[in-house]
Image 1 (cartoon, helix red, strand yellow):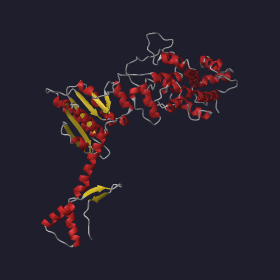
Image 2: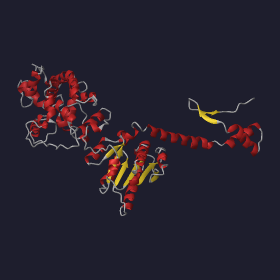
Image 3: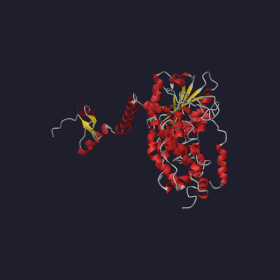
Image 4: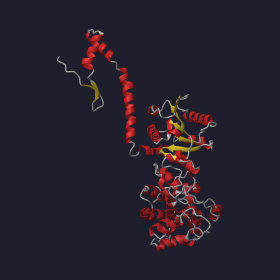
Length: 493
């Protein structure tokens, strides 16, 4: 193995100087706002070894730290949390300063406890006090990195108690353990990624992470961190109420929006909204007498979307305009463009009337409608989303710009099974009547039967035949779904 195989952490002495310079720059603290919680990220920051100063330690009183000092003080009293923190601090420093530490150890015959400029000595001393003798004689630097992994194995699980039970612990645990972390080769690959993308790691702290420039500071607050963490584990974090304060833009009831509105226009993107949930919303608004504030409901549909929208169109109480778009190209929908144009036309048409539109509701999880919101400042918007279909980036954009939003998934919680049943039943009845019964004509059936057996009946005879033998028959369905005739006349022959 070459001298600098663990990632070539620093290419030259300038990198060491640059690191020292950057670490001593003034900290840019972000002001606390009532919309963010930092409880979870403060605990993660402590465990992965982020510097004390970001917790406000040894800083002036007028500075507002990024993480909670109370969390630091609590976790620093726990032996297991201290061990994990100090092991992570050592691993980060070794990975950052690998070349410089390697040179000190091999050229000047020093060990980690003799290089205070590059290795945090307080971390070594605290680990020793907590029962871990980290520094050993004749230990290679790449072996020390493997030691960190092995020491973390029994101690990280003991820190689960610091996080709420509703967080999926394996996702947090994964931050501390890289694949094949108990081998030099496994750490070598992780170090290469860290070396190349160090600025994309949270506060340049080494963790098991796939960096992405679009993430930004993943530890900015709980509302940002947990959705990204879950996404990295091919999952989705849903309950944003657990990570945001009361000032969160998410509404618990659309009635609050209507209460502060004079005239509302509702735009429904049929391609990116669940018809059953939208029908649930409209039924609720109608039942609560809020429809009288609605100037129009623009329902813009695509020829390829669900036929369930018929159920909404049947409601005569709604001021609904339904517009069906076709496709110039099969792979390209025109719904978002059509909806935007019709929305602007409606706003303009009502602008100089006695009741201009001052508020709008967009029912869609598609972020393509953000420009519509941004370029119509005279209108107050509410966006209705679905958990499964709204991207984290769109949620964050709405949150950052104080645009209220509402999760329409609530309309299929307990109490809305009846609505779902009604919508499904309507569609089943329509399918039976339009697709099957419309093709069945009793007179045609009788005439075909007469032709097959070479008999004739006049109109009077046919009417009497139907009255006596056919009228009482019904169509039923067997367990396998097949249609069967019931109440058939008893035949003698």
